[in-house]
Length: 190
Image (spheres, rainbow, N blue to C red):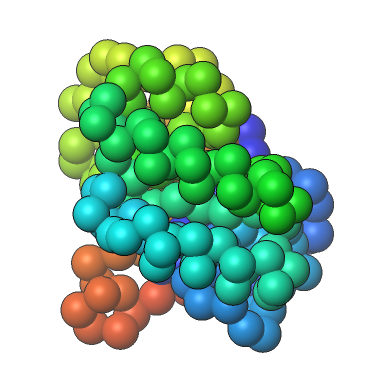
């Protein structure tokens, strides 16, 4: 399973460089890692202006990332058009690796965009009872707030549920957003 580190969970500095690890960066600028990086663009559930989103695409292209992580993406059919336009423009600018993160299963039309889809992002407590309805094998799962003693069990559950990429981490996006904390070394179970 490919490992994807969201901005709030950083890999251990000892993590070996490989093609199976993606680091999502919040802002263009100096890289903290030599791993493959994806530039994060917040779609704000489809409410951001297309001009602002496309400006972000250009900024990431200039930064030299390997692709884009379209975060807080819309999941309903009404958001497909702007997301499709963003994906096409990114490809024209050489950014062919795109991960769409609505954090929930999407309308089937999104499957035609040729992107990877992260169909679960949420806390461990929700993941344990999640039924996975609408998910396909190979989709991404990002599970945060996992007690450290259960990280291995969480990764195994992700594998049984067909996750093609993702992360089980003890870090929390809420802690990062409100208290300035970040996931430390070992936040991901690799």
